[in-house]
Length: 241
Image 1 (cartoon, rainbow, N blue to C red):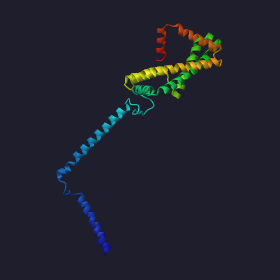
Image 2 (spheres, rainbow, N blue to C red):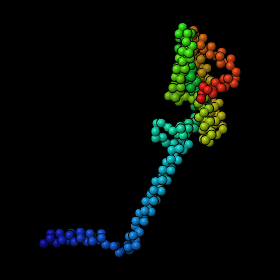
Image 3 (cartoon, rainbow, N blue to C red):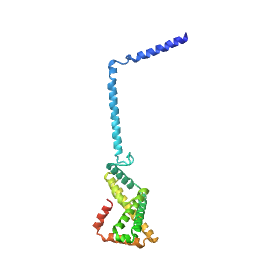
Image 4 (spheres, rainbow, N blue to C red):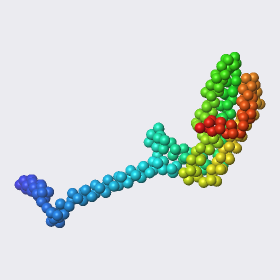
């Protein structure tokens, strides 16, 4: 008897629940219920506005020149993204401590010396083939010299030529001030000269600058100092285009 009453009570509760679902609650009027769609629509619009705002923020963050906020989602950058990364790289280099800029610049100068020494050693010792085909000497030199750039990129060295472009872009975007710009250029140029000089002294002391290597090195040096200042200036622009 008790179990039957429990089953009847459970059935009654279910019926009351179903009936309540299809009736208007006492606290809600028909007008209130009819306003639900507009409320949902308004909430939907607010949600869309928030999403749009978040997208705008994300886009602003993506193209931000702030080093800590830039996010790249592709390994291949568009021209605009490339310029942003370019300027941020210059800002990062310029804001380093002077001793760190100098250290990286000395390493960069040494790596340039490595590439130059490799190019001179190979191109200067081609021998009879090079004498009959002068273009082959230049081709060998041009193919081997960029090795120094690979070394610099993989180790984080700095070059005055690179800083002339990247730090200038950072200054144009107000990421650095004039003092940081001048400091970066002066310290990196000094470090590059020191690094190249150390490599040249080491190569000379080790007896590497002999034979065809020495002849080609001397020929190139005479050709460079024999040109006018404006010619060297234009060549420098063409070299670092």
